[in-house]
Image (cartoon, rainbow over all chains, first blue to last red):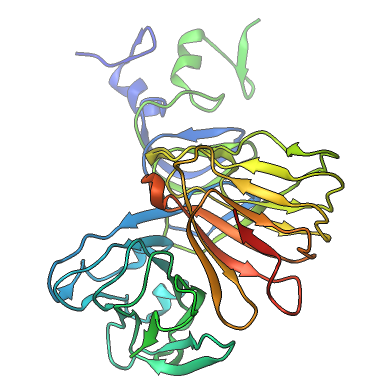
Amino acid sequence: MGTRTGKYKMTKKEASLSAVDGGTVSGNLTGITNLTTAGTNTFSGATNITAATSYVEKISLLSDLTEAGAIRSALTIADTNTHFIVPALTGGTQLIVLPASTAANVGFTCKFTMLGTAAQIFSVDTAASADKIMTAEPDGDGDFTINAAADKFRFTANAVVGASFRITCVSATDAIAFTISEIVSGLAAGTGEHVAA
Amino acid sequence: MTKRIGKYKITNRESQISAVDGAVITGNLTGITNLTTTGTNTFSGATVTTEPLRFQKKISVLTDRGGAGAIRSALTLADSGTNFLVPELTTGTQTIELPAVTAANVGWWCTFTMIDTADQIFSVETAETADKIITAEPDGDGTFTIQASANGFDFTTAAAKGCSFKITMISATAATAFHISNLNPGLDDNTGEVVAS
């Protein structure tokens, strides 16, 4: 059966020439005014947007593993910019493994926020012991406990709803691979919810 | 009048087949090298960039209302990612309403930044009483005043230039819908500029 574009029946040659029924483009597309898509968009080259940009955060609600172990598969570059929401945990320390500190992964970032009282340790671990996290835990008096070469950054069992932090891969040099920022306390004391290990 | 593409007169059939004069594409476009657009781009599906993404934040300067009440229309998904700049306010508490707590709005976020001393309360308020904000106000000594189920998060009259916070919808569950983070003080003593309400 011949394909149709609008009311016109297309020959195979016309269907091959046309892009309005989808297609593989060899080369560049330029001069577009408005562009609207509804499916998945993948930009594997550098993407520059010179106008103001609206977007929503990618939110991912984790599920309690109910025992010690990895709460999900290791993170990859596809998870960058995800805001992971951590529920109350049962049954032991639950962990998530960071991507390897490679040049391709520099810029990887994600955020973790507690949605309940942790009750168990939630640990964000480097993939290899050589990969280090530069951390600063608030002491609750304006000071910080510094560990500039940690293998893990954790919510303690005491962490409550609202406790949060961001981790970013800032370098492909293992010793300075990851940094912690945007720490939020859920407890009035402002300490005891985050710890490096 | 006959249509043209370049120097060529085209028939209605040819116009229907061609995408170079704009078109509605049915299907996927793949294999594009460079893509350049100058209008509004709307991506309503998941968007993945595997190379660095450069973009500008959307900045919106609010205008003093000159009286108590809503400083602008309620926020919607289209406002996500906006950094709202709050000017000095002259009269009465001025408010801005958050988007409804729905699954479609999860991931919505905005930043508010004072560009002068507030002088009046500026209140970011939930659309419904049941919708709650998880907040932590810095006490200036490393501790926090916690309100994990607030209906508003306010700049106080003392809030000074540079004071800012981010609010994110992290859940479609009303009781844990919004989360405050990225608090920056405008005053040396880092307290008294933001308050849950």
